[in-house]
Image (tube, rainbow, N blue to C red):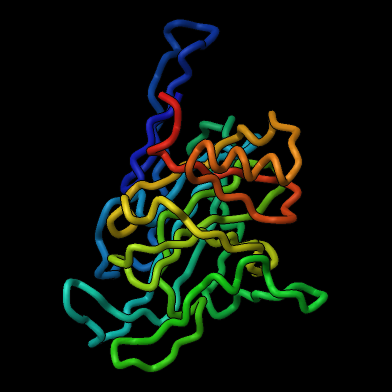
Length: 250
């Protein structure tokens, strides 16, 4: 069993040890922050995620790079890109010598929105044009605000899902799927729950339910209607589903 504090670390306890006297708590600190001196200091869930995938514990962090002097009204600001990093470590090793290994690091300007056949990522056209605080056009993936990262729960899948907004207080949002290994945008979908979620507050969870479904894409759309918001990346063979927590069954 694990208790996760996204700002500090993970506490593990083997609740079914062979020896009852062996029930001890073990602390796993998280990797150092991407930018320790970053001025954005908010809820850990806005910019971090932890998940057990296969036999490994994975940790993701995303940081926006705030442009100096770009502060505007109501706490708005312009960003000069963002950085996303994924780390992992064995889930079954409690040795103090076991450390986190950096799997992938991606910067916004490195993410391609076309594949090897020069086809644009599905849904890319949904993303809006982005301008800075002075009205100057910005590259979409560099200028858009991102947060609320969610790791794919499928073994072998290196996708990281991010909520994207024009700014944190915008009442529309999208979920973008980034292939962290190949630094490529896999798809974009509109997030219907955005009006109920201020900034990048907790809005959706990843789920393994798709592993137990055998439905066509058409049936998946009907399921999305029932659950209000389910985001599926078209043509993704892993078919990871992200569900709005407001619509999850109790």
